[in-house]
Image 1 (cartoon, rainbow over the protein chains, first blue to last red):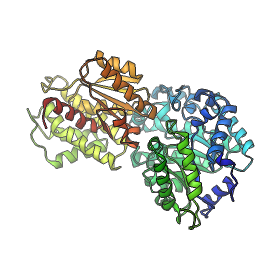
Image 2: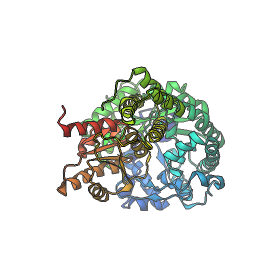
Image 3: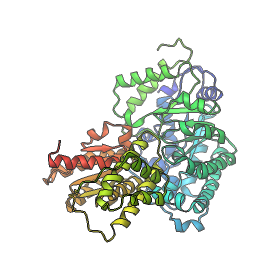
Image 4: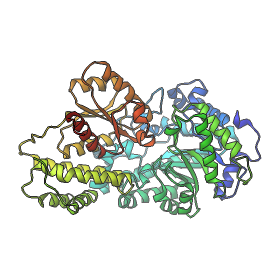
Length: 350
Length: 220
């Protein structure tokens, strides 16, 4: 198990270096293969995400085998819309998908933030607490939530959300207010459970997803209120959509981490953020599916060449989870390569 | 009858009104071509404007939200003009649009609006359909082109089953055109699942459908 091998720094120390902009012993990485955890603990994906003990064992099994520098209590985004009355549809070979949107524009007037005792939220807090206890400060635990401006994509469906944003912005603001309240409460609870940082999935923050006037008028203020309300560090992921064009605004709003897409230049994202936020990304999980051993080696060398010498980053799959169709052996080879060739002192075995 | 030529300035002005979600501005551009039939407006103004919008989306100059609102505005305007007008006698393939397995319908909604605005009459086959159910619906509807939108990788991989099922039932070859995030993230994926073509955005569908029609007609 790669994660059991001794190294000069612990993952927490290494991530600390990245956050402070200091050079560590090697490139930090987070091969976020949560779905693969099901196979590692002999469970289905429904069982893995439905039982806190299995979710914890799955997350730790992935960390142990790949030696990730982060571990996450995140299970599936669809779980958060369950708390608003939606459903998660499970599959054997992929992440749960959000079912039919539970809300309509007409139902928003009576909407309130869900209780954190809702099973879909409570299990995430339980997983966070258990992971924190198990890693004992050695590995940062990443909490997660779907951010206020993007949550309506599952609550209402994206067409209805875009309709509301354009046709009834005041109604949209009402939904955003409820979502900010929910995100602050859920994020604070994860931090209180011991999460080192919260990762907020906000794909609609990307300039490729919503027009800048729309985002600046409605999305950014909501995100800013959420970040201010959390009382702890929070990163923003645009879930494989480009982040560069909004990096400065996210950093201005207080984002501590920026999760970049495959198409983003991580160094440019860091510069745009004025080096106020740590940057992670930008591996393409869908493309990884077909990587041969040679492809993995080539990618590792290219990654190392790109990131040696610059401000340190965390290498991670850009969408938030690596597809189950990527062979686990590919990830093991990738992790081994990053450890072998990823020294940041300039004279490593590259 | 073929559409007369429209100036680049007129197309750009129409595109700008769509991007700005300005129905009145878009309507003025249509009204600036008096005497044109709806089919001529569709071919001469709407299709080129969406072609430009698709390019702008690919370059990151136009956001998905703008593409959606543009398609909605355009569909509404063209529907207004069509009400009471004689249907176009231009040959149009029988199109079906569906979301395979997933429940995220934005891509399908844009696709339907763009196709309708361009003068097609696509059949909305729904979302959350499995490969078998979709293959059955496609044959029941006697489709000539099937357009499939997906969000998740696992759904994209199901296209291969869909194509195999359509081939197995012995009917005429049904072109399956695909789109969605997995195909953008891995441009080789469309070939892997034996799709007939793929588009980066819904506006690419107009070109892809036109290519299929041209193939039928033997036009090089």
